[in-house]
Length: 181
Image (cartoon, rainbow, N blue to C red):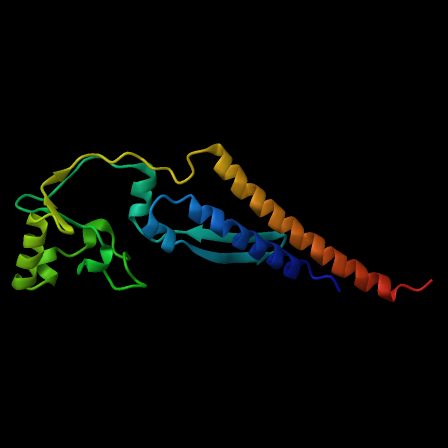
């Protein structure tokens, strides 16, 4: 028997897998590329849903850009070159679940000795930056060329059609083996 929902699930999964790599290549940030996730949504009733998503709240900022940012009065904006060295972040795999404004201050998560070491590293230009303000950041759209979007759409179409073709061949072989003349 031909099961439409099973076929739809196979097509949806093949499209999900086929579009993952080209989507990942279009993301300009190495860190964001490593966090690209995929999920299969509802499948059935002539519809299949699949999603690729980034949980990082700053993915939108990178894609759309942002205006200037200033520190709170008496405070500093603190950045690090390597997010793995930032004690304010949750450990993987739950890193970045908190919004940008919900992160704790650096002083609240390190000892005075650790803070002084970080401040010394920043003064030497090694890994940390303390500043009162940063200027606007230009947008870095993940897919700046229409050709990149078309390439992903073609990969999805090829994957879906390949599954349909394979499944229809199986179905027709089963039907022909039971047909009597």
